[in-house]
Image 1: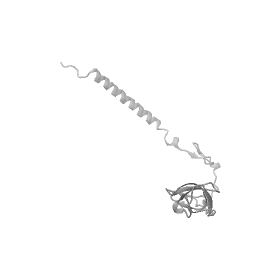
Image 2: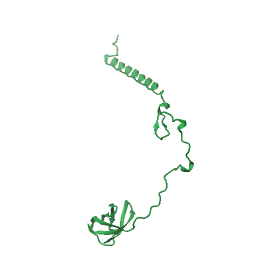
Image 3: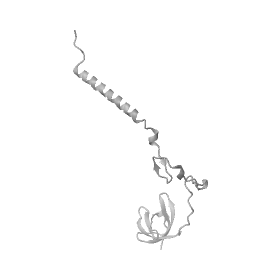
Image 4: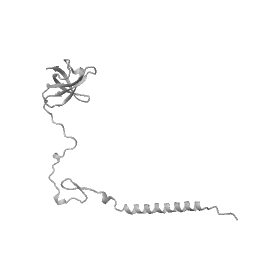
Length: 149
């Protein structure tokens, strides 16, 4: 008669597989039991003050005096602003002649405004006092019609 083909190592591997399968089934059962909470646990309510809570709002405290005209859907239109003083004064904080650009610091708002050589009327250098107008450039405000004071 022949020897059994099942060795100790094979038996151990089978035990591990069986144990792993049983653990997997246990975890599956636990997940099924945990899901019974379901949708009710996920619902959130907004109370009369606009705060999120887990209890439904009291219908007696509900505000009903909202007019349909007061509801704004979308972004409200931007109000027309009065144009600021068109000609501004400032000081050149940086200017690179070789590259043809620099920055002017506005005297009133202390805002730094980009200036390109194409927007110059007079030649400028650092620390010069200038007057300029501001236009919207590709990357933000840009000084144009720059003249020395």
